[in-house]
Image 1: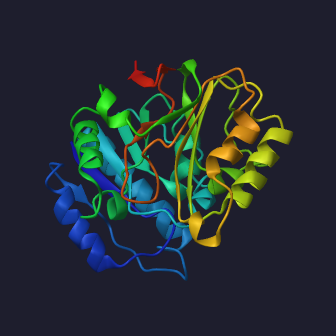
Image 2: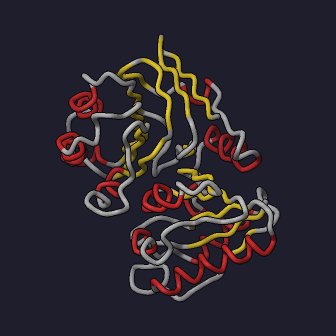
Image 3: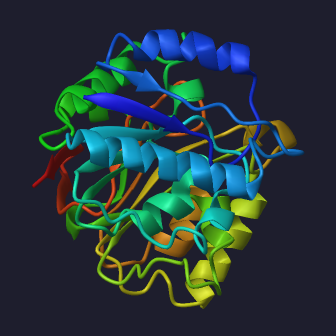
Length: 293
């Protein structure tokens, strides 16, 4: 499968991207990136970023083979693309991946039948030397077989169960802070009947409390199939109550299953999560069985 990189949001060091592209070439038949001039704290002007994605889509369509469309990094600015490119409908199957600011694109473009949206796998972070071996194993498998990807029980040993049970539905969500920026816009996903997944970085518990409170009081947590929380690293430096207590405050009394400490986030734990695919997760007796299909 070929991989087409695009930069939807923040700036980055081209030298580091070149290093990551060398690693990506171990996984993909072709790795393509079309450079563009930076624009302030954006990787390029809005018109250049739109043109870059459109060029990648044309190349994919012209070749007519399933391809991977991967974000270079997150940052800020992806939401600006949505009025310009409302959907990613394609005659050719596309795996779309990234995380953090890519949440808005995965939640929106991922609704297309031709797109397999993967939360995880951006070029700069997911292919850094520091990523742990378990994550590398999962990343390798999903690249090899994105449409048959499953998890083994050993990969989920760190996951904790708040509310046990069985959840079934499609996963949406992503970075909690980024998700909150879509509230009140046309780009907030419909979460009813969905499994809500969140992770974040450098946010102390009181800010997580504030954001989850807004979702709770807005009714976003009332009709879920389940909830999963990934890594929330970096907030400890400011000192706060345990994050599990904040999650329990808003989810402890819910009638649907809730998991936390799933190994996906902004750090070295990078287990990908597939959005908008029917997912069944059984969490009971301290064990997690996670299947897509």
